Image (cartoon, rainbow, N blue to C red; front, top):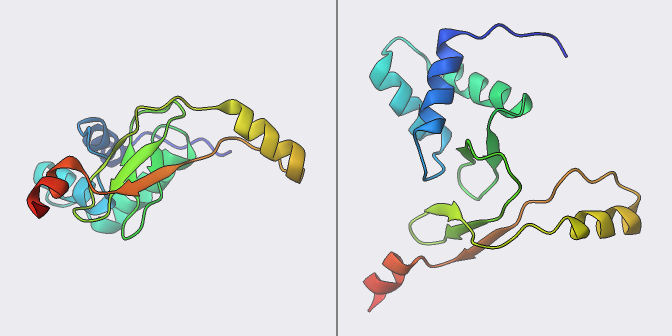
Length: 129
């Protein structure tokens, strides 16, 4: 892969993702970076999020409506609130044997799997009462 120089904009995007524990969307990262550098464009932020994901410096979580990003690189699962859209880490262990079983059954070379559990977070459950 071609060596890319580390730009100020890319570092701002990386720092914005690192500052979050709530798995920000690209728009949230853009707003955070824009507060620091009002000349940065949405396209620059999105392009750098993609580059950082491709290089393995951050992870992208694919959820309905808007993909989310995080700095945590270990393999783990997520929870998604279907009402408010909150995303958080799930307190379950990652099982590599599922990757191995899928590879054996399909012939794919499995790198990892991503699981997103969907439901209502405690706050949204409470607001229904």
